[in-house]
Length: 378
Image (cartoon, rainbow, N blue to C red; front, top):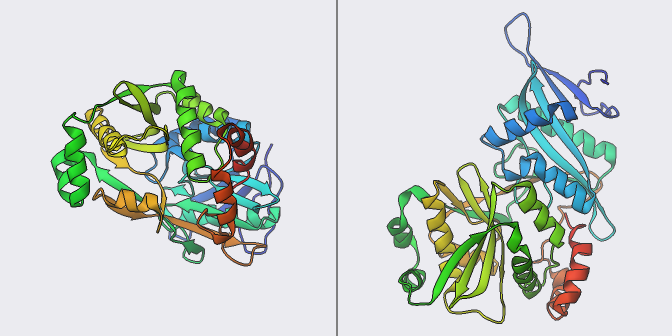
């Protein structure tokens, strides 16, 4: 099934699925190349994933496995926009429509992830995907469109600079990392690196998810944040077995902390972390992330990505002491019904009382209520 070509203009309505847009690039040749933008269909899924795994601007979250797990676990409707020129993919934009009585109606790329947005080979493709996403947002009548990219993709979109990540070049080696750390952090690293602290580490797969989920739930409650359903973490590990692992730290033989790592191309990213809050031996976090840095370097990864942090938070302060390169994340917005940029961050003062209440709830109760809440937060 196909649709009539659609010339993208500010007033042109989007056609019913599948969406096709034709954009002609001005040039001094008799036959111009035509850029088409359409919603992803099954015959192009394999080509989408090949592009997602190779395009410089793509992330772990552009892969189709993320679409399938979000749809299965949370039931959000996907709108995956695909750009092609002469049959060859030149750009992708994964989007999810999210509805919540508390947080509103949004079109997000990509929820439950720190990245997403446009991945394109050239500026014209990027501009076409953004224009198409904006018109889709208008047609759906959402409150806003959110693109979670590392770089700005459109100069006229509103940009929020709340989030950053930290990155280390693993090719440099341990001595270079230590030299850039602040003095107290470097002293702690020397302490845990000598082995006298009684730490050891192991890696595991999905079979150790119950252990990790208990630690993860404890940490999420400690921070006053609803926990993800166990099925969500299970789907990540199950759909990406070669691109994930569970990394555990033991203290005197007892597991005390763990991380779910995402492995994408040459990047290792500690994505979710958990800990036994009743056993917090001195230096456990330092040992854990130093060990992950070492593991990544030994296994051929070139970049350590510390993951997203909000400016002004404890997590941001902790990561900034490691001497890594700070990389701002450009989250951009197109407002449709909303009058101002959304603020669903835990740092928002209006959530303070709820967060403090959540911290005092029994752990089993947070594991029941958390998954029902977190799935509706953009």
